[in-house]
Length: 155
Image 1: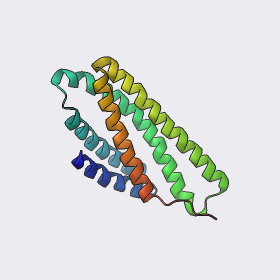
Image 2: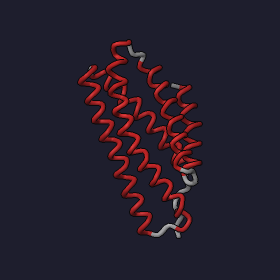
Image 3: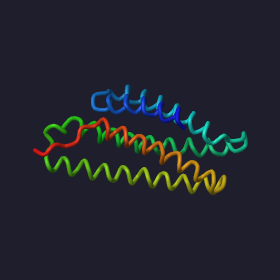
Image 4: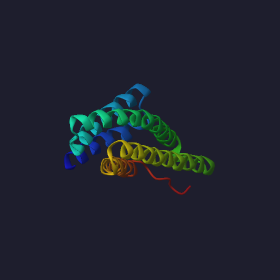
């Protein structure tokens, strides 16, 4: 977990520092690197048997595809915020925050959906391990985001 924290921190700093000005293909490259490191850390944490791995990684790939769409929306929100934060209007601030809340709720719903899928296929312990890992990663991501994104100043 300590190594994973370091890897996630380095990747997240790169992602969020880059998010406001990166081109689409650059963001995809960073996301791909992040996802590979995350998957390796998850494999290390779970220590699945070959039989468990066949079940889990098939479900995880479905999850990853759905998560990718939610993360694209998240990065779009960050990008839009980066473009206007120094001169943001009241309406822009409210709209971006509402989209951010919805995005986080979508991610939570996705975690719950796949917690249930994994629990049904592999048992509650494995489902819980997945959910805890994802919660940990998301907490790290949010922490890095708020450490590296400027807050709105009173106009």
